[in-house]
Length: 262
Ligand code: NAP
Image 1 (cartoon, protein in one colour):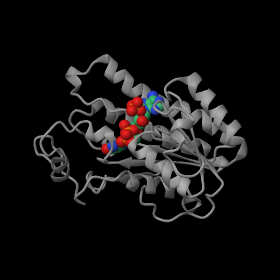
Image 2 (cartoon, protein in one colour):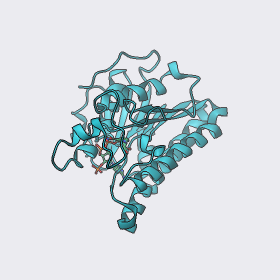
Image 3 (cartoon, helix red, strand yellow):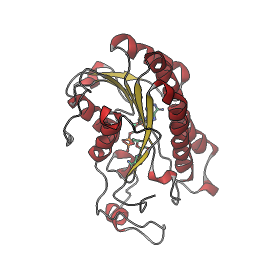
Image 4 (cartoon, helix red, strand yellow):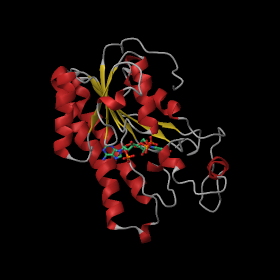
């Protein structure tokens, strides 16, 4: 169970679609929203319908879909609106990381990264926000990364994809502000999830992340620990809530200071 920092007025009874819901950060977002009384559609290519719903408390329905497939995206958004009702909140959290230096990077790693992390956010946002516009309400949060604004060794494709979705989400927020729809970005730094721990191949990799490394030009994490998925989920929770009613096109970094405030 994640640490939920309270609830926000007006969220209970609303409906959310969260992509990447089977992952570390996505799973925490589902828990936080569900604990606030939000009915959640948990979308991931790694969920398998009702069998997966038991892992969450509250009203959660699981839908398997690949966010980079336009047909699957339309089908799943239709199914969620039919079964759960109009979507009030969208969280774009599905993502992949294929680390590697540019000079050795395969076409496939570049294209897959852009397809999932950037095209996936476009497809899901377009499908959901089109349905929000006639209702003249809704809130979107895209999970970006502090790598979108700070160069990182071995992360060019990933950083480029996150810079793309950060700009995309801001532009979308500008286009739909007239309908009262808000679009924001949460940009995590190193967070304790399978995406990061899968890269730990020995030694004290967590310590290196925290302390920084001159060799890879990383400054470390001033707050002295990796983010927990709940740290990111709590920021998403606030930005979706009516307490953030006048916040749009914002990029909120949650990285313990790793990007030194950028
Ligand atoms: P994670 O545990 O690997 O979760 C990502 C989830 O997204 C996985 O369940 C993954 O399924 C799913 N997914 C990937 N491609 C998909 C697709 N095409 N369609 C549907 N689902 C798909 O990683 P995480 O750390 O929670 O990451 C969540 C988000 O935070 C990502 O956007 C990531 O880039 C971002 N982020 C993470 C960190 C970090 O340090 N962890 C830092 C900054 C930003 P598979 O397991 O099958 O791939």
